[in-house]
Amino acid sequence: MTEIILRELSSGDIDWMTLIGRKLNIAGGDRLLQPHEHPDALYLILEGELALISSQPQHTVHRIATYASGDVTGLFFLPSDQPLPIAVTALEDSLVLAIPQQALADKLHQDVGFSARFYRAIAMLLSRQQWQITAHLPKEFMLQSHLIMTKSIFSVFGCLFDSDMCWMTSAGKVKRLKEKEIYLREGQPLEALDIVLQGGLCLYIYEGKCNPLSLAFSTLQNNQPRRIAEALPGEILGVTAFLDMSPNVYMLKANQESLVLSIPIAALTPKLQQDPGFASRFYQALASLTAERMFQIVIQLEDSARYEPGCSLCDTQSYSGELGVADLQKLSLARARFNWMLQQLGVKG
Image 1 (spheres, helix red, strand yellow):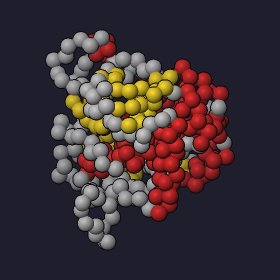
Image 2: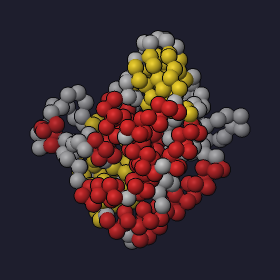
Image 3: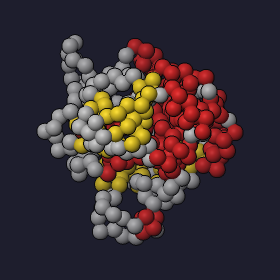
Image 4: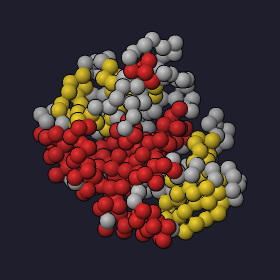
């Protein structure tokens, strides 16, 4: 991941992080973060290797993911302050740079150029980490979709301005998908970034090693694609391929009649280059969305306490996925923006 940090950030950004950050030596076997800890810093791994470790060793998945030079951990830029129920442990003697949360927040608020570059880098790093985790999920794993619609809307539309929404609705085109229609195949180049407006699409990946060229040209495979998640209204499709400018990494298939807003990459790229404010908010939305997906995967792997529709609540129990008052207020604004988009596009919510 080192190339992402060095490619996406400017020399001035790196100088600032070096100045404000604190270098920490972590001995092999020691923990950088404890389960359920609220980190007060962003940790950039400079040397060594760390791992995201399950807090419940009896689970099949014990080491969830590994972090190497150039990776980040600590602050996951979630809409609300939700600590992960996992530990971050050094697999060998490692060196990390701790960037204080408040100093980083101030810098992101004051320097729109830094904000755009930083959030893009974070979105790319989290996207790669997400797919690293996804590639090693148990075969029976299926990301549960309840609450994801709410969290997706919160993650994406809570970061954008009304003017951003106006541009997206004017630049995009609504596409109608039939039930069971394959919208995008794994291996195909990405031509647009899509927002699910209505209905839902399923995400499939091929297990084992598959030739990307064979996938792109629909050559028959010995193995069948495995369904791993469902994309509901508010989700952005194609984030990983867009950030890496690489072929799509999964197959998308409509599981019901659906509508998506398709924003051409040819229009989106110059907008991001010419409008730093839009770029900052847009990449923040992508980073937040990818972080939320990672959070949901880890929570589900951990089987930690979560509220299920129809269940009674316990006053003394903390549930993953529950939102505080401030988050609910932000969610209300985000949902209003999404509903406004639907209205402008003539789509019934």
